[in-house]
Image (tube, rainbow, N blue to C red; front, top):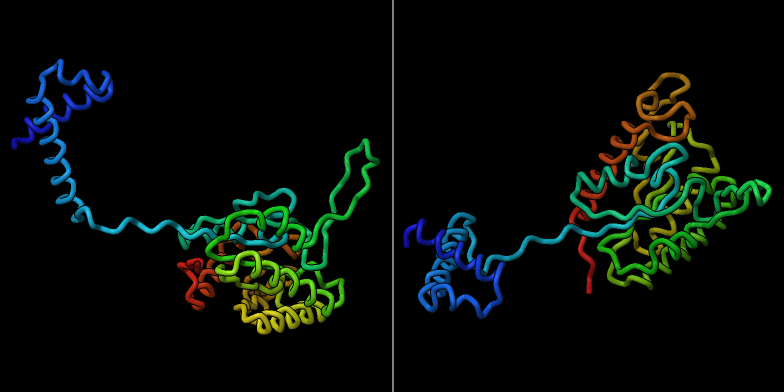
Length: 277
């Protein structure tokens, strides 16, 4: 059938379907019109298959993995920064993930962060939530994702390492029970220079032990030297990637951290995570 005839049939069919009741097609050409329109549809379908190189049995494109990331200000941003500029969405863009970034600045496995009450309440600061509370309020009620990443420990340095380890164990166990088929990755503390505090190293070590105990992959930004040198002394990559506060990454720093996370995710074979069951 000629392309002109195909276009004519398709146009007539569109007119009948889009502007008139379904029974009205017979009033504007009867069976001949319906046959021509049907042939036009078949011809267009064949042309589309030839053009795309795929037939009716071709598999549909896979949906982008849904990945949830729970963390502190490194993950969701600190005051004055936007959540979409952190390493979490940056890594998701590089990997083609649908990401849900959850958490709150200043929080950790034990650390609750703080929140300021309104002036009518005296402007006092009150305790926020730990990662467990944030998991339940922001993530745990959602359908199971294809991958859960928990990133933290930086703000837990003021608490005993044993207490932090127990809180991490409880959170990760809860997540495994809630979403049995979802793989989990634990990321240790991210530090703004290459000389972390002894208490931070103790937190890192206990988190690594919990990950091994629960058979969860552990990513260690300190050991992998994601950040080198010190902004204050102008050494390493810290001057280009860490803000003047010496703690939080710049926008460029977040992009860089995303590339380091992506490299580790690929090393673990989780760039295309799939939830089981």
